Picture 1 (cartoon, helix red, strand yellow):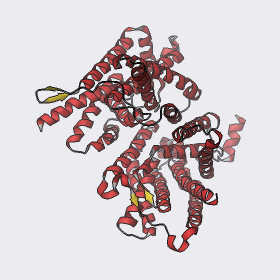
Picture 2 (cartoon, rainbow over the protein chains, first blue to last red; picture 1 turned 45 degrees about the horizontal axis):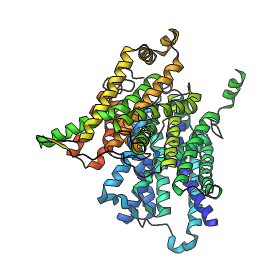
Picture 3 (cartoon, rainbow over the protein chains, first blue to last red; picture 1 turned 120 degrees about the horizontal axis):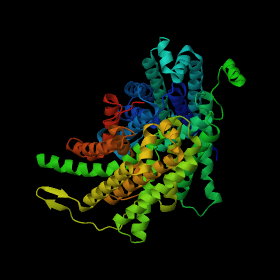
Length: 304
Length: 288
């Protein structure tokens, strides 16, 4: 049971990093990304290739995943910043799909659907049975650092400009801000975090396949961020915990309704994820922890 | 080489005609409701399975079961829109698009719940390809193209010749003006969703007749469908037809240079290309 909880907490931390990445892109800069899983998978593949095929140390794998995914995200952003929200959603969705197809087909590089196994787990031989617990602590540490830095970013001038662009890009441009540069930077930071999350996953599971690009993960992260609170870093973390808890608790449905097949249970679970997302949009569009607003703005709103 | 190219072009045009049907559905819903409805994918699957029940279980011939595919997907479309998306009308286009993704997942997993995830085949005979000169043509593809053309012709007649069709075009063109003329926007929206998702269902069944069906039959095609609608110009029905043919052609001709597994990336590349060069699409007029 403990090992189960440790595994769940690890996934919660990885999802939280992903949700934080999406929050930078969408919550702070207002650029929706339906292909967040594409960047996540990209990061996982970079570190897997670096550490397994090139024999690089794990730290270099992580660095490569973060930098490589950031560059990829910046390139994507350069192409899409001028697009409307709904086109952005379609293009990013397509990006993730293209990334999956490449991972599946460039067998010389990625070993195709066989996947890449033997991705080194840090200090596995010294830690032995304690690896999982230690890796959880590592993930939590990473999450803590990311959260701290992003909170600082949010309240910094950079974060304020991002929010200004999100609310009205024309006004921000009129105030002399280089909108394109800020959007590309936000996308790169979000992409770097998604790549980091991918690397965390790769070195945890030690084995990745093109299935890592499953679009459903993007939906999980969307549910995490919207239920937690779009624009709120702490909300993203809370949302990730809620989603993992929700996903896992549905596993125990089998005890309640034992006549369902495994496939039906999986279908039921996906159904509930969709329903959850819809209900959040209906009843708590701001999420559990809505984005913090300046106090005087709330006052103005209250007096209206 | 020339023969191979022409053969691929022929295949591409036939695939494109089929692709145009769900693309019209997507573009119609967009034209009236002004958001990209991702649940087109799930409604393709609904149509495919509605047709499957008629065809494989009740023995209805495939071309007749198509009507069932339309009716099933249209009913599901109106119901899912009424329950799932209507409460969010007036919110941003992005919120509605995300909600439609949620609806899409719910419908697809409901189908998977009842039918399982493994592929199923329609009760149709496998027929040998017709050989005409140097070219090969599959009878089923020809039948599918005819069905697609008939569906498009019926839609054309409806939109151009009936009062309701004109009302729908009026709402798409200028909702405020249409409203002031006494056209009920809710009724038109419901009708547009019904016809649009019904066409998606027809498209889903046509795709299934060519291959096999499972709950993700629409989801796998969705990038191509989006590409057809976006390349043609979101909101433009003639655009969706042109876009469908263009994407069908591009996907087949890509086989000259790329392995078949990369076909699904063509749609993405086409979207990226058209949005860079001509964001309103080939036949679209509005950029907003």
